[in-house]
Length: 141
Image 1 (tube, helix red, strand yellow):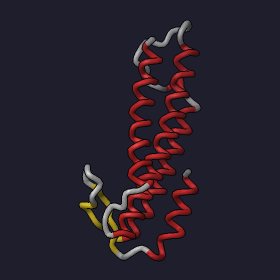
Image 2: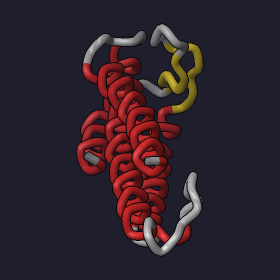
Image 3: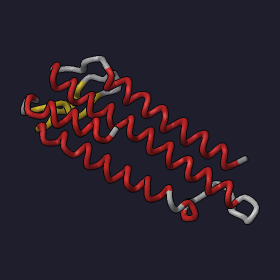
């Protein structure tokens, strides 16, 4: 997904106007604008966060679990911690791709073009929330 976002930016960047939407209100209407170069920060932030989540998923012993880790539950908790990180990484990827597409579509249309960007952004945010709730619930049982 990361490469899809980078490719979407690379293909559409030359045709973007000098000023693009950089923030959207709850209804999806652009309410903040900036230079098109600000779009280049999204993949960089995405890459750093994705790398951090990937690194964390390999070290579940350092997580802060909602229950005390004992010999009896350690392996189960570590496995759930890893699953939580993988789910967060997937949800974050969908969220960032949706944000990139919203900016690109909003810049092209001059307003929010209803399409895949808002859908992906919403789906990614829901996935992040569900992943956290399910992950924590599984650790508590």
